[in-house]
Length: 335
Image (cartoon, rainbow, N blue to C red; front, side):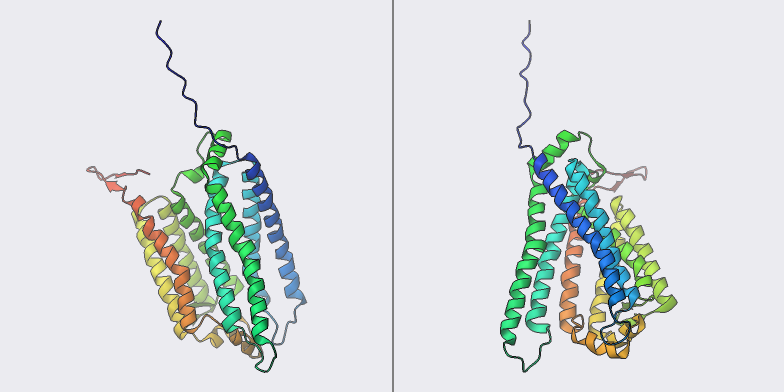
């Protein structure tokens, strides 16, 4: 009688179910906090003076409220998925964590530079240097914990092989989030966010958008936002499907948006822009004190924000090289 082949045991791994549950609870708590910020932002707008230098146009709060609301839904949804050890949740949380780490580092550096070099302070005030140092130290600790350490910790955890194996044991079937490379999915999600942002802009700022150093408002501004949103949406869908035309369309759009941002920083009439949004002349003096987006700093900030997106798009070009027309004229796809 022939001997049976030896049974090959799967490689052991550390079960990370507890960690997935704790991080899931943390994400839900953060989502509830973001949800609480929506009514607080609206209440703060109602309580602020409607006229005077400190007034804020009510429609301008639509954008932060939409962002807080979207974050609340996303974090709670991801938290529930993490508790259930869903494979799609691990992939999406890993993507969002790495994105959050990058933006956390960028925001920390920007706010530190703002406090140390751009924040206006009275010339005759005693201890200005010490005050700046204290503010910078506080912001370093705050941003370091919540915008660098926390997303970095989560990115490290959800990238671990043990976490991936734990999710695969609980759910054997691959999820929709695993149908594309993580870098392709990451850029797709951020492009989707950009599309939604372009759709909110006409309502938040009276159809006013700065483009190529000019102020476009009213019907023209609304039309511009809708056209740009439509092009981004088409490019995003084609890109997600790994169509080369989507890759080239997004490359062209990103180059155009970077050029527009640089021209805005150099040539935009910010007084005309804020007036078109709804700010009064007495509010403009206050705003101009904190307007950091003009000049060389604005150009540098725009480049820092756009270069990673261009780099990521260039990196994912390798996945589009697998699309080759066959002799029959069809397109063969291989992930």
